[in-house]
Figure 1 (tube, rainbow, N blue to C red):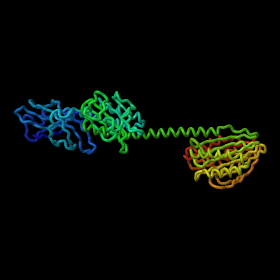
Figure 2 (cartoon, rainbow, N blue to C red):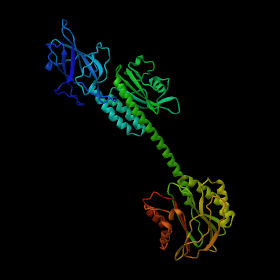
Figure 3 (tube, rainbow, N blue to C red):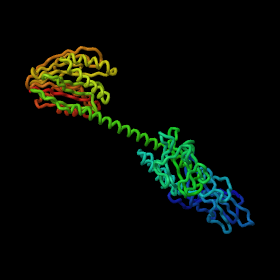
Figure 4 (cartoon, rainbow, N blue to C red):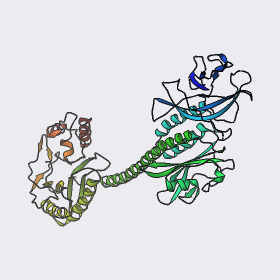
Length: 542
């Protein structure tokens, strides 16, 4: 007898899946008069059928269905037909709508069915009852598990905190499948061991437990071979190490990133041979997503640690640099000093200094190291230290800059340099002698504003150079502004510079000060991504 199986037009929906589950069987030849086609007796309510789409070919729907063998009494000839019903208990008897004296026995049989042809016939393969052990789930339940695992995959991929990720992995898998113990072991980069980072349902192993790779347990075996190992009966597996007394089967799946085993996903169940081939494939696919998520979380964690370390170092460097500039400004009879230091980042290459040379003589320096950030700050520190050691040895700014330039040319990396204004103020005579190493001209403010005509030498550190010097007398009520190019070259969002003209205009106001200047420059450059260190020193003669 050959039977054609097709879907019935009658209602019958699998709960939570939305698939019509009524199937009709029609004999093609060898028609039995007691079993008429399209009658109520041959429409089976296949309540458990549910399709699972294959990733290989979308035109096919993969079913695990039952082969029902319909038997007449002993004197009758047996009939065979295939019914697409998902059922994981082949030893159980099914009570379906059938003619009297028929006995129906369920035998599980997997096959491929083309989705567009529900009339397709299927090969009949008989398997003795009880030949395969019961599986953990029926079809509808397994599809629902797939949906839960899919949602879990999205949640796992959205987590970047490694500990939270692994806790979510073990809890989501255990909740989705049920009646299982789940553990995630990660490889220790500093030893030949696996460390337990996530666990659910195991009372023996805790977070931080270790297993030797290749020596201990199925986890160690999988970590060394990089291949999935399934123990349908753990008592017969030589690599299994007992965890829970109720455990009967276990699967360990490698977590790989870039072809390297970074961990192992271990799942235990209380039933013998609890995982079907389809379930193992699903868990292996899930393990791939977990491995990617773990690797991303590790990279994020390492990046976060590195960023935090760098932030601590920057904070320490900034604190040290600020400590230099927060030192008390010397009290010079007849003079007052205003300073402003505004780094573009955590640290700066701009700096200023006051050096007591004795006999009412004071060295005043303002400098700008090329570049920004930590490298500029390091060069600033070395330049400042050299200037402080050289300045007391020479009476004139020109000589001081010459010797400082010679030292920096020997030590500075290629392409690095310093622009500097260095002056010696004689408080008794009110004279300030200045020398410039490629620095912007100072601004003299005395009822009107003008830039000093000052010859300049090459920036320090580029090569041999001479440094002409000039002397200016600072009468009472006279002010002299020293500044870095971060002020005049500050740019707004239209690529327009603040410029010398705005600087002159700012100090036409008798109440103008350096802090107000920095605030104005910042407002001018708001919205621009071209920021530079800005430093200014204002000398007031009283």
